[in-house]
Image (tube, rainbow, N blue to C red; front, side, top):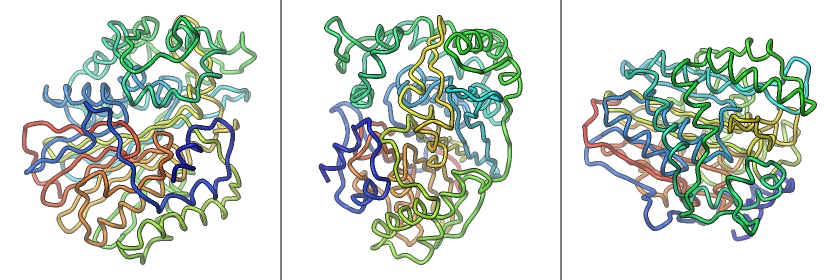
Length: 455
């Protein structure tokens, strides 16, 4: 298994099938001594789980102030863009699956796409995506979704163990961009260590525009800076690309798996096609064989889609929220590579995502937010970062679908390549538990108000 820890930190592409071959092995525990990777409640309560502790705590504050799962998910993303920018940022995109308090399901797709005239940079879509999520399903003013992230960027925050681990291996990218170098390298030119306080005033100003003027203001003001910067770098993002960004609201795909009905990305997307292949491959698998079968299904899916090699780092992350009304949100987002294209738009603090045609352009296919329920159980989870994460999430789904209880991080199998391949889960079966990837340093958090029946 140690071999896969090493592979997970390499920048060079590795064999997709070889990378998957360790997924059925042992489990690795994460945590930095202060963060809790699993939080359980005696009764179902609002819970949050994600890859970076400061972002999780920001989302928890929103829930504590009466926010919905959608409010918290939006706050989580914008905080991640500050505290976990290797994998989340305003230059990227993603997929969210939402279950409202009445049980209705909706999928929001806002993946980064290629500019009309091609080029190395993707068209940012995430600001519109999370604004639409919050507009449709939020309970608080839009500004509350942004303010926590803005404060973190402006006042600064100490580098968490999660971010410090995530930064390893990104030195070549950081050194080539002046803004990234100023933020993440110390005076000796080395990556700053956990506990070092960093700020991003330029990103704080961008978030302020987004808070005050919404996605339209972002498109008008920051969009103009994006197009000017892209043009100066030989890119081709134009005003027409920025204006054409839309959020698809569609029905997620559904499949029965044991006692669960699983909602996963619509099969009209690469993410949905890959998830469908994995779920089909484990349709008749027992809980005892879940891990090995999920690995085999992922390897078969990669082969059928003619994917022979993948980068070790897709620049992706996923998170999940359950609120005290029983509403749930699962999201997975990507920059198509660590720090996206590794280029910061002047005076914005925003890194542009890499175009889907680039080396990490497969990232969107491995985003796997899911919401599943049945027979008194609820599963809200997200995988991101590669086929390892998708396989790990599928294995966890199989185990719950076949009657096994998910109650500790050891119940989530990881490749050891985390935090590059992530799985975060909220599982309810009598009690609810928030489980962060056992191979990383994420955080599960719970509030103190009981939720209504979640099924």
